[in-house]
Length: 113
Picture 1 (tube, rainbow, N blue to C red):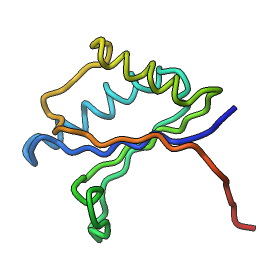
Picture 2 (cartoon, rainbow, N blue to C red):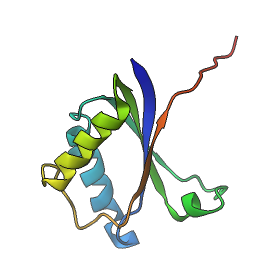
Picture 3 (cartoon, rainbow, N blue to C red):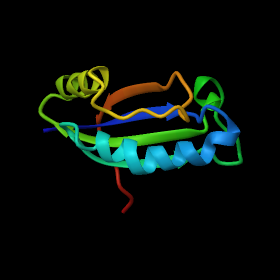
């Protein structure tokens, strides 16, 4: 079984729609996405006040990290994308676009101690 992460960087369409964006993302989008094959959990983060990122990632306020576990990460990601393309995942006009995303396969893991 291969482990990995699916990172999705997004923004609300405008600062005035941020509450709508967060409500949609937390209560509609993530519950739908975690039903996709291979996705075992999801966590969302908002860019800290430090504004440390430089480059394209710094253009986004939010990142969602989906934990993956699958015999074939690429195939499961394609199935997820197909669900989206068929309109099986709800959308919201509070979402800015385009999102930036990538799937990463775990190479190694270290823990303190």
